Length: 182
Image (cartoon, rainbow, N blue to C red; front, side):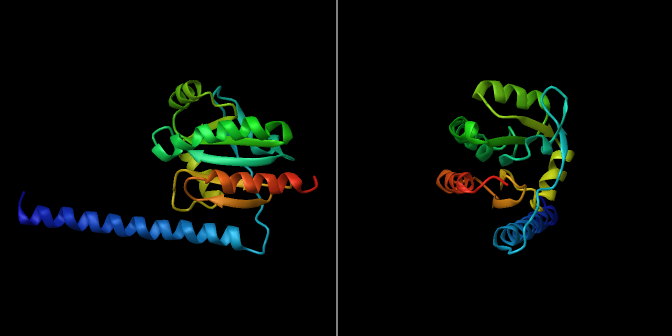
């Protein structure tokens, strides 16, 4: 490797690192705005295909407490979250809580992963369409995993811009379950 090509490689790496830091800061700023805002942030509407190719509208689950998780089969932290979501769906599903996975991935990969891991909640998918929805939900940095908790009225109540902590997520679910249906 020549000095010149080494410099180019170093420059590209530095610019890439800086861009990642700035994008991450933008995602964090959006997250903080959603979580700490006095203003109510409504759930954006979207339609994405399920694993059978049927277009599904988020409004189908209106009136439920929704946990919308943006993830991918190729994302190690995303893969680690799935067993927790399966357990929480089983625990709270009969009480009106609905987990929804939005995979930034190909249907075939998601189907195989879902079967192998016993996923018991609806899975929607797309590549660019799923990323566009994630951005609408505040993930301007394109971070995965990214999880949003939505109350029965359709208001975003909490955002996990990275891995969701079970204790905090369960606390949020319990709190929303105690609120009157509206």
